[in-house]
Structures are given as structure tokens and as C-alpha cells.
Image 1 (tube, rainbow, N blue to C red):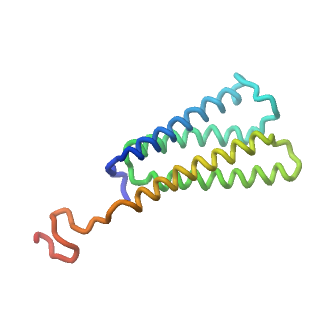
Image 2: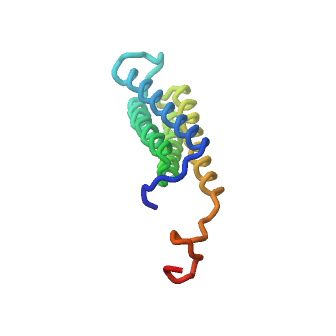
Length: 148
């Protein structure tokens, strides 16, 4: 479970590109609104904006890790998915209590949750499809004494 690289597949490269692009777009869009460069046309729920910007940076980090084939990417993308789902639940609660949360924010969080879930599921499935290693590094079978 260390950070040693795994063999990268075309699917890894696609997943990495999706995570990197999604993260960069999220950072740019969130940064423009956060620093006053763009007006989305509705009341901005500032904690959500900050959360999304931080998650954008996390997507970039996950994308780099996926690109490099690091083993812990499943855990990173699983954490991203869980955090997005929790944020979606909190946002739905705030919206249902009548506070100012734009419907566009709900849609965007649902989309972010879906993207993070797809990334996580794809990485988990890819790991599950790899054959199990049945020999030790020196070529022996499990249970053989070292050096055989």
C-alpha cells in the first residue's frame, strides 16, 4: 500500500486527464467568482464556492497521482466522492430549509458528485480486474522457502 507506481493503462491516462481537466476548470471558475472576476447571476453560497475551489485542487492532485499510476488513487478518488456526496447532502438540507442556495449550485454539485463517483468506480474496477500475483519476486510459489 505504498506509493509505488502501478503499470498505467490507456484507461488510467483517460481518467487522469478527466480529473486534471475537471480540477483545473473548477479552480478557474471558482477563482473567477471568488475573486470578483465573474458574476454568476445568482447569490453565491460562499462556503460552497470555497469548498469547490479546494476540491478543484484535490482533483488536480488526484489526476497527477492517477497519471503517475500511484496505488493510493482509489482512496483519493473515493474520498473526493464521499466529500462531494456529503456536500450535496448538506446543500440539499440548506436548500430545503429555505436558505439562499441556487438551483444551479445543486445541479453543479450533483454533477461533481457523479464525476467523482465515476472516477472512483473506474479505478476500483480496474484494480479488481488485474490478475493476482501468485509468485514471489524471486519466482517461487507462495509457501516455498526463500531462495527456491
